[in-house]
Image (cartoon, rainbow, N blue to C red; front, side, top):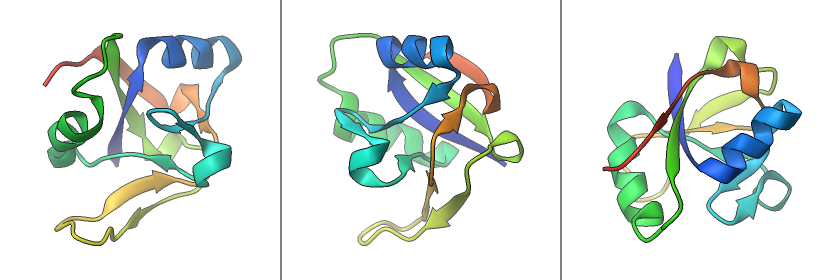
Length: 105
C-alpha cells in the first residue's frame, strides 16, 4: 500500500542524511506523539490545508511504500473523520519513501 506524509523540506533533507525520519507532524516529533501521522491519497489536500497552509518553507509530499517500512503501521479511526488515517508507529526508514516531490495544494 502507498501512504503519504507531508514534510518540510529541511526536515526531509535532515532525514536523508541520517536514514531515519522522526517528525510526527508539523512541529512535533515521534517521541512526543508516539507515531508519525500519514494520509491516504484522498486525505492529503485536507491535511495540507489544515496544518501546512501557512507554512512558508517548502513542503514535500513523501510517498511511502508500506511493504518497505521497518516500523509497524496501521490504519486508525480518527474521531470526526470519515476515513481512517495511517500512522507509522516508529521511525520512518527513508528507503521506504519511494517518491519525495514538492507539494502545494
